[in-house]
Image 1 (cartoon, helix red, strand yellow):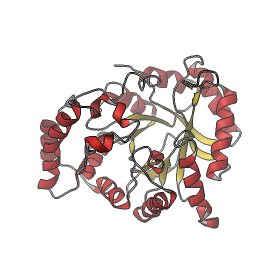
Image 2: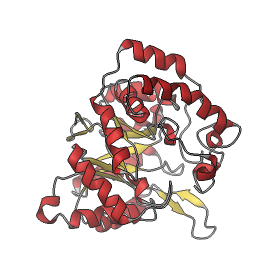
Image 3: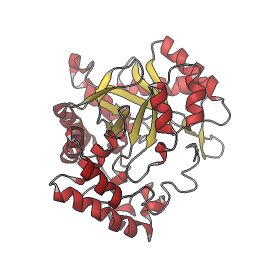
Image 4: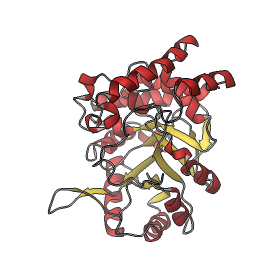
Length: 334
């Protein structure tokens, strides 16, 4: 498995990691046994980077990972580079989703994550969403203090604008910025990719196969109807869903012509965009994980890249990637 450095001074990790939101019921029912099978296959494939969060299944994802590590005994140290996140919470009075970047909240949530993971220190800690009430410079100072305390090794931000990255970087080294990025969502190319490259910050791409659109088995309307998150996303509502599946069909045909899984090509395309990109697809299936990992070993030639551009030109996808309520938190910059 090919590796790239995580951040300016961090470890080298597999270019394909695991987005552990899939260890919850977010994209369909799963259980700890299935998730542990995915982790076992990850080790077989040389995948050593896991991304999770305190809110994935309200701690379930972290507990699943922690339980797997505990079964490895003394060998658990160094098996995976683990990233987790905090900042999304609920207003105790209204029950509404809010974002909290205060030192008190982040410190408390990190302690909970470390306990569930069975770790004394996490390799990478993200601010999951920006809190409009706390300046990013102050948040960065909090993260630097957590590094100094030995609670985290590096820090990053999820779904921030290039301008925010610049402000944070002026305070301390931002190891990674996480953003949705794929052939279906290319907004990072309008400033974020360039800014991360400038600072030596890793761009960690989540949903690199377009939440299933860029695979051989895209979600059906009936399956999406059972997914609380996805059924709210305009891109996966009719008439957009049918249009997107039809347009992505040509991409699947290209994959078939070279006898390669569609997901593998989607991963390879993204990894070839820049040397600082790392992808974290989610899956509940060892077989699917193998397809995703295959993308790390592919090199797409100019002819294939040209055909992909024709099949899926910039802006081809119908419908927004988030609903109005889902857009609360991510920073828009283009």
